[in-house]
Length: 161
Image (cartoon, rainbow, N blue to C red):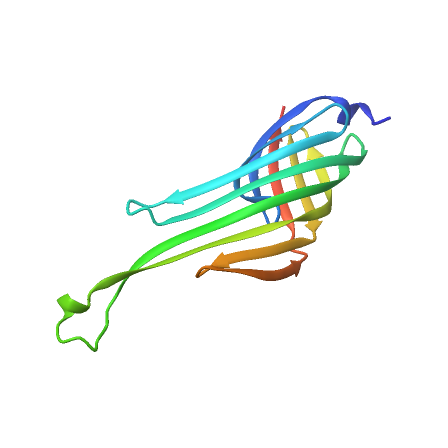
């Protein structure tokens, strides 16, 4: 049986940053049975549609909870998309007008994996630090690449009610 502090259904909003949680504004919901989920997003899009976008989704399960905090495990996935266009000049042409062109750099990185974390509570605020094992896969220049498995931490600062 979980203590009373973890049995109440909670909603949270705040800031999230990490390898398997994503980066940006986060919304989380913790259920009475100790499970919960979180989503995060930070889209940055310019007028020429160059973009940097962060998205994340995570499932939580509380392992132990007290009035001051909790220990939990999670399974999360985050995506980082980047699109950038820039002008490119080819100096072997006769005139600049013939050689002017633009180049598109575009890439996607996915990070997913399990993690364990600790959360500390103060009144209506919660700070958590988690250490996941993030499996990272990238896609750029029409190639899928395995980028490795890294223990890159997740952090969140949330207001809950």
